[in-house]
Amino acid sequence: MHLAKLQDWGIIKVRKDGKKRLYSIQNEKIRKILEVLEE
Image (cartoon, rainbow, N blue to C red; front, side, top):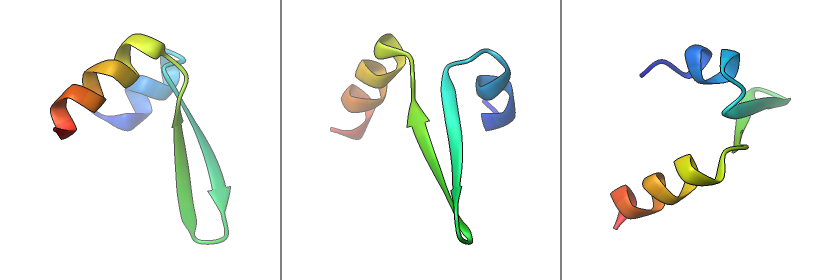
């Protein structure tokens, strides 16, 4: 899944911090799925 698509759907937000990009997940369901995947 491409991050730009997630942005379009309003699931994530991107903040630029210097050269880094900070992605914040707006959608609670997606956040839980990612937490499960990380384990």
